[in-house]
Length: 129
Image 1: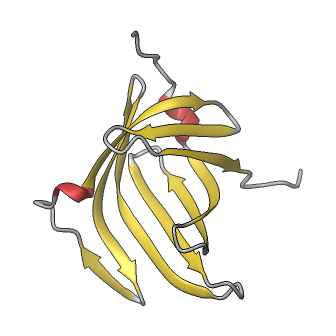
Image 2: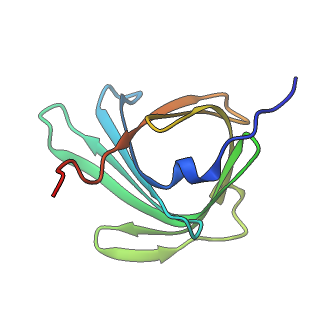
Image 3: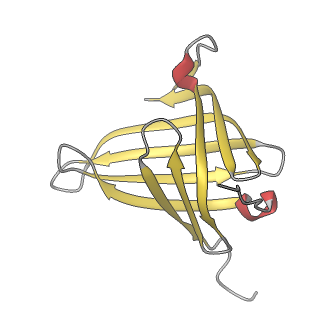
C-alpha cells in the first residue's frame, strides 16, 4: 500500500473535535498547530449538566511526514500549573496515519490503537473587516 503525501501547511491553524467518552460525558478537543512545529491542544470533559469536569492543556511539537502525523508532548497546563513532560515516558510520543486532510477536515488514525479522529477547521476570522 502506497502512502499519500500531504501538504504540511494545511495543518496550520485551529481545529475542533467533539465526542462522547466511555463515561458518556461530552468531550471536546481544540487544537492549534503553528508553522514552527509547536502545538497547543485543549481537552475538556463536561459533566451531564454541561459543567467543565476536567480540562488539560497539552503543549508540544508536531510534524507531518508523508501521511504520518506525529506529536511530542513537552508539557501540560492543569489547574493553573504548568508541568514539564517526562521525555522518557513513551506515552508522550504519538503517531497517526492521516486518512484525509484538506482545508476543512483532518481525519487521522492512531498507529497503535487504530482509533480514528475527525477534526474540523475553526475559522479564525469570519468577518471581512
